[in-house]
Length: 196
Image 1: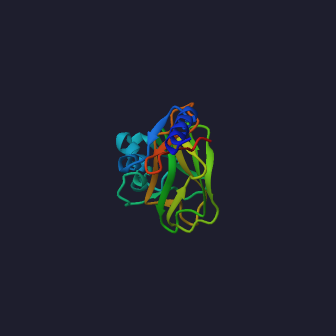
Image 2 (image 1 turned 120 degrees about the vertical axis):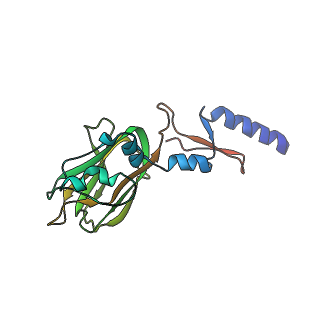
Image 3 (image 1 turned 60 degrees about the vertical axis):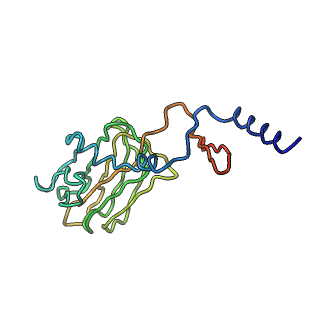
């Protein structure tokens, strides 16, 4: 067989075994869509998308963590087991959550996901919080959800849990029923599947 014939047969075999969904390698536009700040957008579209178990006062209401400018802060009431959550408006594939706060943010907290706003599944647990800015990446665990909640398990007394911002980044999930996403890699002329 010649090199040309072998390449043709290999290409045909790959085409027969590749899943039906084929997408181009992500470009700048795709990366921007994947890295969209979903929590601030959900709040801007519907301020009732943000709720909390309580606040210190009206000036530290839950919306303060989602307005997108980083100040002023959102402060829970002075108690343990408080929470703040956002309804993202649709199901997304979360790839990171950024919490920006003070040293009094909270000693122990859990980030949780829910598709229906009732049943919560933890995807990150912090047992020794020190404040500042924290970025939680969900990889390799995939988090596909509509609601994201920070549940403050234990505060750093005497204050409550404090946040300047609560950001959720992600993109649209793969359509249901597809085994994974397949990308064409033009430089190598190969098909790579990340089907799981």
